Length: 366
Image (tube, rainbow, N blue to C red; front, side, top):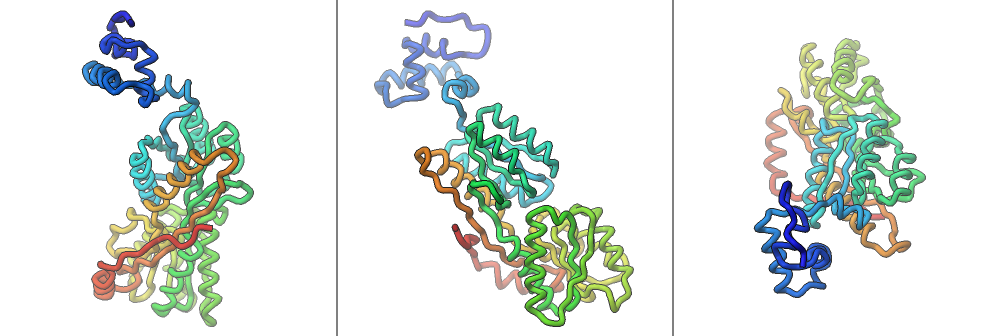
């Protein structure tokens, strides 16, 4: 029988054992292997835990088991609502499976991303979801060598055999450009930056594919220098200064923040949106929807990506060693037309038609 220990701090497993009148091993079995303990004994231990307010030491348990029931999520930036949506979906899915989600944002800094991954390793997290926008092979391989599986979110890795869940960014660029062409645009201004970022390069591929399908439609590249609003402000001002015969008659921002800034600059210069130039975004960032002209964009299904990523990671954790098959889940994209391309009345009519039309984002699971 365990003697009552001194109580000069938070209750410990020793206090639980003493109050329940059982051994330390029995308390450990109740917490970790309840099937080994008689029901009446387990009830006494749980009553002692409740009475004392005891909380298991997760760090100590991790030292024994080698991992915790936690999942790490590292995102590129929480300033983009896509990644906030990923977080929400992942958190709900993790909680449903009794896992805790640990969250970090690298703010588009590759070194910071590596530091976050190293920290998550030190906490003995069970695995990591990595919502990156650029090549991170060395960081990921190091994390995996240390026994922590990694699932990519919104990025399809090259040369790394790992699970991933992505939205079809090429399709997103394609359908946004098609929409502008349908609205009568023949000179498509593509406002973008950072072609090294995979979502950017794939959206551009979709833009080019749509333009190639329509003879007489041309591309006007507008380098914003960066993918945040200041780049869009500069790009919008340059577009507004172009001679009318050379100016794009339709604009697609590779991000919604770029497109929103372009809209602001065009209107400040007396150019009407969408009557003179329809403008669309491409990544469904809710931060960009509150301007004077609500922005057309393309769905990214962030919450679905987060949910699927958790499912992929937990499947990898539970598959027998050597039997897991990595796969990529691709989610489709849908256009969400708003006032910046349709005008107020047409946008309102479109919302009314679409209000009761659910969509399934899943497209393929190679």
